[in-house]
Each structure stands twice: as structure tokens, then as C-alpha cells.
Amino acid sequence: MRRNARVLVIIAIIVALCGTVLGIQEIKVREFHRGGDTPLGLSLGLDLQGGSHLVYRALLTDSETGEELDVSENQMQSLSKTIERRINSSGLGEPIIQILGNNRLLVQLPGIRDPGRAKTLIGETARLEFKHRYLDTDPIKLESFQPEDIVSITAEDVNSDGKIISQLSTEELSSPNANIVSFPALVVDFTEKGAEEFRQTAVTLAMSWVLAMDSTRKGNLLPPDRLGMTIKGSEELRFQVAGDDIARLDGETLIAPLGTSTKFLIALPASEDQPATVINADQAREKLGLNPSISFDIKKGYIDEDIGLTGDDLENAYPSQHQGSGAPIVSIEFDDRGTKLFGELTTEIYSKQQKTGFRDQIAIVLDGQELIAPVVNSPITAGTAIIQGGDFTLERVKDLSLLLESGRLPIPIELIQERDVDAILGADSLRKSVVAGAIGLLLVLLFMTLYYRIPGLVASLALVIYALIVLTVFKILPVTLTLSGVAAAILSIGMAVDANILIFERMKDELRAGRTMLSAINIGFNRAWPAIRDGNVSTLITCAILYWFSDQLGATIVQGFAATLAIGVLISMFSAIVVSRTLMRVLALTALSRRVRLFVPSGGKDIADRQSQS
Image (cartoon, one colour):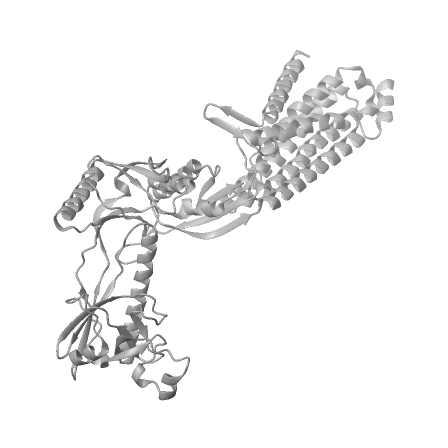
């Protein structure tokens, strides 16, 4: 009896601990943290609370041959840790990260509400570069244009409709709707090849103009590219034009196609030699002469020079606010090498603008996109600076700081699989899973009680204790519950009852053989144990095989099923052999043991009669 009492105390302590763990929604003990705002604080998978399922492939190629190289285990581990650090620090939640095979990485983000931000944090390489931006650039001759690419060059007065005035008919000139406002322009007729090349050049100029205007709106006065033309005729003329709006023709348009032909209009601005003088068409014809030629060059608005200063030279990066304006900024601190390079760069730019007046800039570029290009008001040699941008928000500077702080990803990755589950769909799945589990448990309890009577009640109580222990283990480990995991947990309930059925049937045979209640219980458990052990061990082996293959293939649904079922099987063995056996022994020592009919489903009266006769 003392032995049974000790086991009962242990069972009571286990039940009390399980109830406490499940009753506390969130458990925090130093660095140990379990639970949250989910039911009972359990960790729920994507299909039960929504979120993102992302699979990435690591890409490592030879820079010379372009051949794909093998990714090492250390590189994958480093990649996993970098991504985990980024997501944990962002406040997006706790990710589930798993290496699949040799070069794949699974990232699951249960409960996430902003999958786009998560993918940005995971995939960005955060390649930060500081470049010297020169604004005093020299013209570069366009070698693609050859003399044979030009058919003819003439000077004409054109109107804002893109028509040459001299080619308009009398009716068109006398029409009330006639547009006779004109401006001088060169009409350059190209060959087909020359026209296509010039068209591409015009598009490039137009894009440069748009970027310059956008930069100006953000407060950075960035000059556009300009097309230089050198015309050799009776005199040598040189003009520079910028690519304004190529699609429109008005008094301000500088370059435009003339209809769908190979001819282009190039407006005649002031000469470089005499900027205050605008050349008209008659003057231009005189200077062109009879057999003019033309060559083109591009004067870049700016040129960025790589000085070797990158995000790798950062020691610290953190979000803050500008002291004057309160705008969100990223404060950065360089290491010794970065401090030296940044100090040399700012000193060179400041000295140049003091001598020549040209105010070069520092272009701060993240992953090929310019963040800001500040000027230098004085040399900065202390190794600290700030990054600010017109589109910066508090969330943006926080994410940017994380990317810079965690550095570049050790190897490039590409997203090859994505699955998003809506939170509403996940909540519906969770509700249905809870209902299914409750119905399954109640049906099993009802069957066991009605058929096996007192042993059935004992099995039902052991099953409730089993459920408490299983849920507690799921919370403490923690085990991420998915729909497949819930199915495995419900299946393990049936397997837990199956062990009790084997024991009770064996106990009934012992009672028929004339054993006493206590003896029948002990022998029934002992003789049923080999069958219970072998059946559960075979199930555990199957779970191990399923888990290993799903781990290699990234089949998380199968993996969750295998892990949950294995835990359920192990705990079911404890509940059947320890909990049920102890409770049955205690009942065998009470007066209830004399009423055999309460312990067997059928034939109880015959067994009781034989025991009374003997």
C-alpha cells in the first residue's frame, strides 16, 4: 500500500504541475520563455494561426566560370543564424528555421501580419556602399555614331506640332487653327541603324532628366546627363542639350522624333561660346554650309567612384531621430579602417570645393539604390555619421539598422516556394480541430465507461491525465502544433486506450481462471506488457523513419505528424502502465473488488459464483 501511495503522490504532483503550466498563459523565467496569446499558450503552426511558409535555395557560383558551387554546412548554419537574428530583432515573431538537404532553408513565420516586410528582411543582402560622387565630369565621345550613319543635316523653323514651317501649305498657314509659333531646330536624318541608336540615346537622356528632377524634389540637386553635339560646316558649332520630355513638342522640348521617320528634331539652344545668344534657323544654315558633319558626346551629370568603403567597415548602426528636424535617421559608427577611409574622403571633397567651387557629394547606396547623397561642410574624422532619406519612416530606419547591423547574408539566396495562410482561415481550422479532438475524447471516454465499467472509469481518468501531460509537453518543449499534429494527437488517444483494453481483457481472463482481483490485475498488466511494448516500439520506429525522411525533404506536415505521434505514444505507455495500474491496485484493496461484475463487461456473475463456491 505504501508503494501505491508514493506513486499516487507522484501522479498528483505531475497533474498539479501540468495544470499550473497550462493555466499560466505565458511563462518567463530568465531566458526561458514559453507561451503567448494562443490557446493555453501552445505554439501553433501556420495552418492553425496563419502566417508565411518560405523555402529559399542558396546560390553559390564561381565568379569566373559561372558554375554553381557546393554550399558548405558552415555556410548554411551561418545563413540560418543571420536570418534568425534579423527576424527576432525586428519584432515580427519567433521564426521556425530549418536547413533542408544541402542548400535549402525553410523559414516559417506563424502569426505574422506583414509577410512582405519579413521577406524583405530575409532576402536583402544589405550591401551598403559609400562612393565619391564627382559632379565635374568630362564629355565622353559616342563612338557608336559614324559619319555614314548620318544622311543629312538641315536647319529649319518648326512649330510646336512638330511640323517644319517651310513645308506647310498655304491653306495650313492661313487656317484659323494654324500654329505659327516656331523655334529653330536642326533636322538630322539618320540611317535606320543610326536612328535606332539615337533613339536609345534619347531615351537614356530622358531617364536621366526624370532621375534628376526626382532627386531635386528630394532635396539633392543632381544634374542630368547632357548630349553634346559638334557640328563642322562653314564654322564649327558646339551645343549641349538635356533630355527633357521626349514625347512632347513645345518651345521647351530639346530632342524629339519627327513623326515615324528616321528624322529627329534637335532644338538649337544658346552656343557654349556665346550662351546669351540664341542662334536662329537662318544663322544656323549659314554656319552649316553645304556639307556639314556632326558628332555626339555624352557629359554625365555625375560619376560615382568606388573607394572601398562599405557596410563591412561599420561597427554599429542604430535608429534615431535628427536633433533638428526630428526626422527618422540611421546613426552609424565606423571601425578603425572605416574611420580612416571616411575621413580621407570627406577631407578630399572639402579641400576640392574650397579650391575649385565644385561641391562633390558622398553617395550612400544600399543594394544599388541611392539612399542619400549629402555634401560635405567640413572634414569628418571622428568615425560617426548619419544616413537620412526623404522616404524614411520609423519602421524603415529600424529595418535598415537591422540589415546593416547583421551584415550581408553569407551566401546569396532565392525564394523558390511561398505559401501564405490567412489568419481567419487559421482560426477556423483551430476551432474545428478543438471540436474534433473534444468529440473524439468524449466518445472514447463514453465507450470505455459503458463497456468496461470501473476499469473503464479508471482508463478514462488516466486518459484525462494523459491529455494534460501531452499538452504540457507540447508547451514546454515547445512543439509547434499543425493540423497534422492535431490528427496525430487524436490518433495517440486511441492508442492510449488500446493499451488499457489489452490489460483489461487479460485481467478478465485471469479472473475467469480463479485469480483474486489484485492477483488478476498484477498478472494482467505483466502479461499484457510485451504486446503493448512491441506495438508501441514498432510505432515509434515508424515515427522515426517518417521524421527523418520529412526532415530531408522539407515535408513539415509529415514531420509534425511524426513528432506529435511519437510524444503521444511515449506518454500513453506511462499513463497505461503507471497511472491505470496504480489506480486499479488501489481499487483492488477496497470493498468494490468483491463486486466482480463491476470489473468485467460480461460474465461477471459466473465468475463471482465460481469464486464463492471455491
